[in-house]
Amino acid sequence: MRSMLRLPVLAPLGLLAALTATGLAQRSAAPPASAAAAAATARIVKAAQAVAASLDDAGRAKLQFAFDSTQKSNWSNLPSGIYERHSLRMGDLTPPQKAAVLALLETALSRDGYRKVMEIVRGDEVLRRPGGGGAPGGRVAFGEAEYYLAFVGTPSTTAAWMLQFGGHHLAINLTMAGSAASMAPSLPAAQPAKYTFEGKEIRPLGRENDKAFELINALDAGQRSQAVLGSTVADLVLGPGQDGKVIQPEGLKASAMTPAQQTMLLGIVREWAGIMTDGFAEPRMAEIRANLPQTWFAWSGPTTNGSAAYFRIQGPTLVIEYAPQRTIDHIHTIYRDPTNDYGAKIAAK
Amino acid sequence: MLAAGAVSPTSAHRRDEYLQAARLAVDPDRVRIELDLTPGIAVADGVIAAIDSDRSGAISAGEAQAYAAVVRQSVRLDVDETPLVVALASSELPDVAAMRRGEGAIRLTLTSALPPLGPGRHHLRYRNAHRGDIGVYLANALVPDNPRVDITSQQRDAAQRELIVVYDLHPSRPGSGVASFAASVGVAVLVLAALAWRRRRTS
Image (cartoon, rainbow over the protein chains, first blue to last red):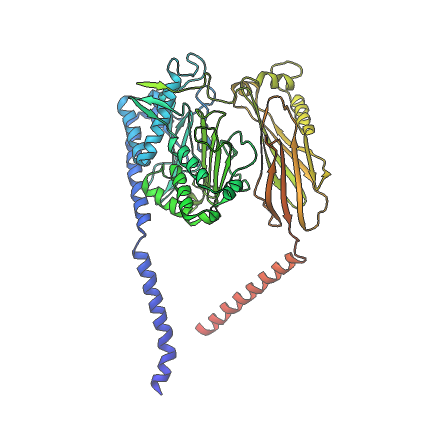
């Protein structure tokens, strides 16, 4: 009799104990991705503080902005002389200060991301130099001196802040909040899209171009007819100034691609999502991968590599556009997350 | 050693074109069009001259309104082949210097009331005939805010001067507002009852 009465009492207690143990186990084992991201933030904060420490008060005043300031959206693809940037100008720095900034960028970006950013900046040197196609002596200013750095919010391992670096054809807006980060919106662009440096041919956006052409040509006729828009897309739809807009997705849904094609699509996405340091990029890629069935690939233009063609990749948390400006030698791209531009989601936590 | 490939001979921006980018927001009872017009630096003077009718070098409020009206008249909208009246809701014009630099975008918001439409498939057609001589166009639908509107496709002409948004309009559920309120009240009553029962047991 006593054992029968005990069961209704002990069973719920046992269940409660099991649930509690599970919860404790989950809390104590922090997901590896989160730990790597937190470590990345810590390294970036240290490098950012080193930049600030290398400057005098006037330099720090140009570097540091409040998190809720309008500096957050003070970015553009346009060069100095047409668009005014208000932060710390690379051309005004001493060599040790410049080295500190580059060390910060190397810490905040992946190896490929840092390479891409430096190649875009060097491309602007091509425009600046005589015969480079820019307008030397005019009001517009090109070159590596015309790139700007800002901290929007105070560098912190816990509170939200943004590292902003950019100039002509470049805007990197990296918002961090503890172990979470968002690089949206950012704008890597290139002109010239191909140049020679130290005897090597440089194509800052060459990999994304080539991978996209591989994918469009890997589609069968039926898939391609869905992916290819029957009209010319002349420019970015969601470029600078288009914060908060969500356009209707179109093209070929990734769920209609083969696994190999989906892998190619993710490879293209990584050219943007992977600009951030790996600690941030891997969770981001995992998020994008999880949303892959609802991700679309759209194309406009010829499908032969070497042609000027537009493409767009759009998912629930992702928009990438690649838009040649009438020529393959001048490319604008945009990278957005409609749910997390400027770290809106992570900064709110 | 840095050497260029085939670099375009001038600066890096849209020069001899007038970019006109439209974004359409479709609701069950109206359409809103955001239209951004950005003249390239080589055509900016001509566009400015068309706006600055008194040649003062600045754009007055009256001149801005007049130009916005010209653009509005260039936009045609119809739903299921029934023409709609397009109204100007707002306009922002940059200063002349910004337009000459190639960074000044004219921003117009146009709206059209839709006639009462039954549930089912509808075709909304947008056409922009403004400055076809120098215009370069983008036309896109935004994801609808209202769940009754479900865009199934977008069809454009080659130059994106025309966009047809094909969408399904779902019926609104009769009394759906009342039903939601009743459900919320029911849940609140249950929660209060559960809290009261717990207090009785612990006291």
